[in-house]
Image (cartoon, rainbow, N blue to C red):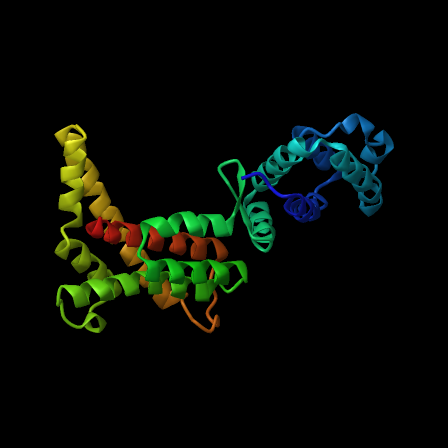
Length: 266
C-alpha cells in the first residue's frame, strides 16, 4: 500500500532529523541519491561547516522535497532511509528507532507499517500467540525492550501450554522453555509432516533430509536463544537492560516457532 500524505509528512520529518546529523557534503550526496536536484542547493554552503551550513542547506532540501510529485516522494523516502541506515550500525539503530516511533520499519527497500506486519503474520500463528506478539511489538516501539522479549517468549509459552494440555503431556511448568518447544514439536510430529509435504511436491530426498535436519536444529537453537534471553533480558517491568535489535530478533524467532507449531492444525 502506498504511503498516505500524512505518513509521508511524518516520515520525511523523521528522516530529516537523521539527515541533519551528517556533514553538509554527506547531506548533499545522500539527497542526490534520493533524486533531489542538488544543483539548486547553494554552493557556498557546501564549502562551509557547522550548524550555519546546515541551517542554509536544509530549508532548500525541504523545498526540493515539497516540489516533488507525490509518487516520487515515497521513492525518495525509501532511498533516504536506505542510505542513512547503510552508513553504520549507529545510524541503522537510530533511523529504525525513529521510524518505529512513527509505526514503520524499513525492510527490504520498503517502509512497512508495523501493524501490517502483525496482521500478515497473524494468519500463520495461533490467535493467542498473535495477540502476545502484537503486544511484544508494541513494547518494542515504546522502547520497552525487556518487556518485548518477555512477551515474545510468552507467545511461545501460550502455544506450548495448549499443546501440553491437548495431548496430556503433564505440567509444562516443570519443563524448561526449550524442552517444552522440543516436546511439542516431537509430539505433533511436525517435522515428519513437513518431510511428507516436501516429498509430495517432488523435492529430492537428499534435499528433504538436509532441510528437515537444518529446520530441527534451527528450531532448537531459536528455543534455546529465547530461553537465555528471557532469563538475561526479559522483564515485564522493563527494569533489565536489553537491546533493541535483540528484542526485535526475539519477536521474529518467536513468530517462526509459533508458526511451525501451528502447522499441525492445518
